[in-house]
Length: 232
Image (cartoon, rainbow, N blue to C red):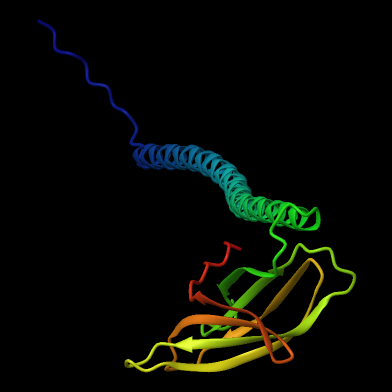
């Protein structure tokens, strides 16, 4: 068996160093390239996130404005509904009050027609007394007295009307003169005024006295009965 021949190579001391440097350069280039790619991807993601964030901000602004507009509309609707309910209630109350007033006026018109047409009694009468509270003062009361007579006369019956307030007491009669009115009646005369009670007074009745000179024409006493005021 023949031995292999020996080959003698020349020594190359820089070859290994060149290979090492080339490897390092390739590694640096690879790392730099990978870094550039990673940075580009991150920038692309950041740009997309910024665009998405801007879009979300715009959408949030739009929804906020829409919510504000809807809230304003709801508030306006509530105010309109409240105003409509208040207006409807006020109109209903006014309509009811007007209907009651029309009924009262119709009764009064019929009453006056009966008087003027001679369908009622011909005697001088105190037909009615109406008492109701005064709105501004709880101790004051408005009165309305209707006097009638059905005789055919050429000139009015003249005289005076005295109103006396009878008060409740401890077994003793108490009274005081309230007011005097001139009596001047042909068919109908309406007397109106205000009765004001002091702090300790309790009304029991109201006396209506019609007098002509020294002659008493009518002396009538009404119980103190207050009619509630109609609803406003």
